[in-house]
Image 1: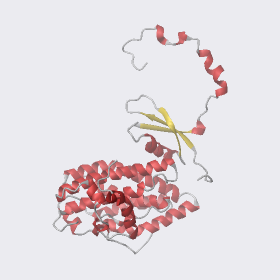
Image 2: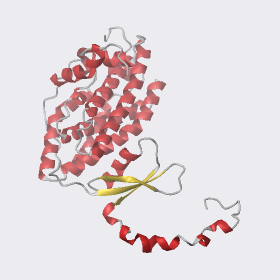
Image 3: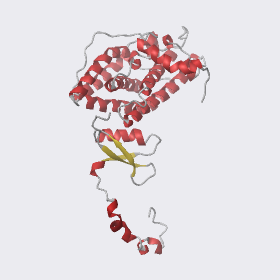
Image 4: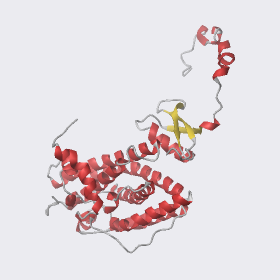
Length: 96
Length: 254
């Protein structure tokens, strides 16, 4: 196994029956997109977790770096006025 | 155990129950040994689907033959000669290509069989078949995807897939055999004629092989006997392993 070339890594996103968006659930190895989709079905939906699957090559994801954490995220820490807690939410507006 | 006066419909459901059980056990033997973790889960998922189908069919068998045998009685208390599965499903796992080829050839047959049984006059069998169709559709898709990738892959994977098909092909003839049991259930509308499944099986398998750049093996050797309890050598070993615990410790639970 160790001398073999590992198949590429894929990130798996699943939308649950009542869910509105796909959520990241994990990653797996597969030779190509179609096999990744099937592996995701087998590994992540055995207990009726979802009704829709996305797979994305992990290599396609550009991630923020831990080194950039402070300039990226720290400035938002003291800006409480950005949270919509100062407004009354109309009852008719759902999923906000 | 296959008594003379038994309803042929019970023998018929027992044959398919045994097919499901034996292939389920073979696939379970891959557990923790598959080429990858993902494939390990995939193969055992298929094994569990088949085990579920086997359980439903054993239950129906015991209703039809009025013996009241439990699922465990069927699985653990019968001897090799009492099992009436086809020879194809009992063949050893071999390398991964052999397992894929066995699944392709059998799932194609099983899908056509379940589709035909969806219209069975036995409503319980029809219900079991209707549920199983969805499961087997996925099993066939899984086997098809791998056949395409191994057949149309590297020189080595192509050669292994070719060898696997050649090794298993002789056992496919048995799937379409007819005898007094099938004649009876066909006449009563319980099941479709096995011979009429042949054309659909041929065209389905041929299409996959063509796309996978594999040739259909030609063979004149057509071993048979599984439906009468006459099995290949490897089956006894599988059964001994499968039944050992239950027979050594009757009624063991955990």
